Amino acid sequence: MNRRDTIVALLALGATPLGAFAQQPGKVWRIGMLETISMSLNAANLDAFLNGMQELGYVEGRNFVIDYRSADGHDERFPDLAAELLRGKVDLIVTRGTPATQAAKKATATIPVVTTAIGDPLLLVTSFARPGGNITGLSSFTTELQTKRIELIREMVPGVARIAVLMNMVNAAFQPQWKETERAARSLGVEVQLFDVRRAEDLERAFEAAVKQRANALVVGQDGVTQANGKHIVALAVKYRLPAIYFSSEYIDDGGLISYGVNYPDLYRRAASYVDKILKGAKPGDLPIEQPTKFDLIINRKTAKALGLRIPPALLARADRVIG
Image 1 (cartoon, rainbow, N blue to C red):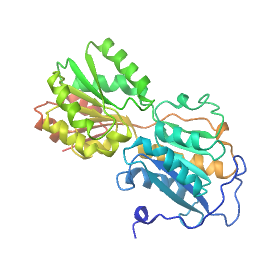
Image 2 (image 1 turned 60 degrees about the vertical axis):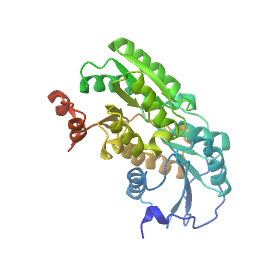
Image 3 (image 1 turned 180 degrees about the vertical axis):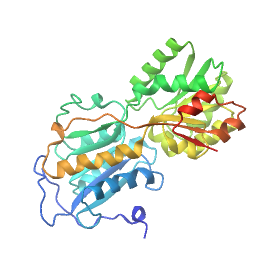
């Protein structure tokens, strides 16, 4: 049976107080996962986390089980999902993104929280070196990479003057990202237009408005809404012939043009080491938040051809992977 489809709660175990997680013989740890998208859409990242756990000597179903909860692109669901995990008496919660981590923080001050990827950790912790409280994990470095994405889409689309940007401004992580986007645009001499997309229903209207306002390129923000609707966004970019740059490789595998960002499976694999340390007794607030170390530039040659774009040879040479 497929392990992603059959992860179930095996034992109703009591949550362990923060800081009292020394390994216990025969203990089956219950790990809650508070995620933006379903197991099937998140398969590569989930597999990376499970492989990381296995490398550290954990066997799923023998000494740990996973309770997986997905908001499926609806961030407003996170508080209820976090409460469900607490009722299930999880020992630790693994999150992705700012809204999920905020919900976990509001739900508990005692159960450890490990974030696999968060855009701006300082929205939730006191420092990178000593986060304090019950939260630690990895940064996805999204704000700092905005300038590079603007540069790359300009290189891909010569003469671009106006770039549309899709962001869900309810997500607190996008406030600093938008400021960085505006700063980058000014320094590079291009205009950026913000399109606030908070639901799937907002996406097509945003594309229509972007084209009417003569945008000739697009930057897609990484959020639960865009993750859950990735294939739809790629299809809209094709429909409106709008060259787009994305945050992660999934979009390019679905036919997107170009992506640049951290290697998310690597972050999930590394998150397993945080889980291991905490289960062995470390306090999350004492574990420094780590920065990403792997970044991927991926280009879809077939999509570029369909859009009538010639990929600059220098850009192709820098790509970590070329599709088509």
